[in-house]
Length: 150
Image (cartoon, rainbow, N blue to C red; front, side):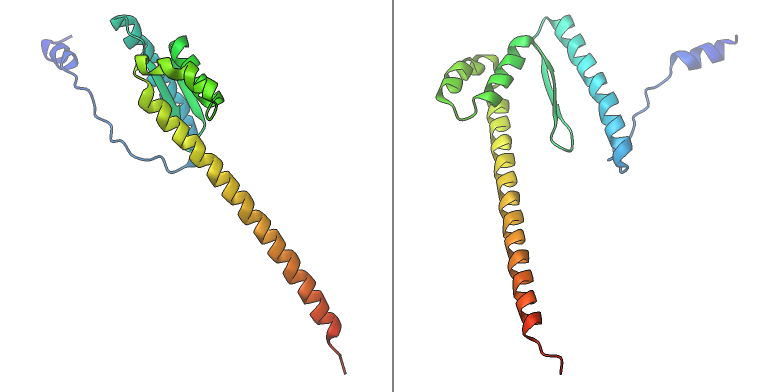
């Protein structure tokens, strides 16, 4: 091995990969799954090396949440989801402020409420569409029955 080849291999630079949206939906799901595992692995490593409590929440494009973190943090997130409008839940989650999770929990609550409103609105629109379709089909059948074919 020549000295030139050993020096060039020791000076390898890290490649900066361009971050761009994965257009293919199937590839995007696979990429998310692989990178999520890598992200959680790095979070676990950071927690071990620094003796820190680490939490990561990653949401898919569909809104499904995946989380990694200390059991106490997971418990706080679960309580926040379960007791969204319940006074008892707010009291149990009061210690969330001590963990520094106040803003993410508030954001999670906001997003869940927004999701509930969107689902309710979609159901209202579907019902209105069904009623309009039923009304137009009943009007159409009476009009057709009144026609004379002379």
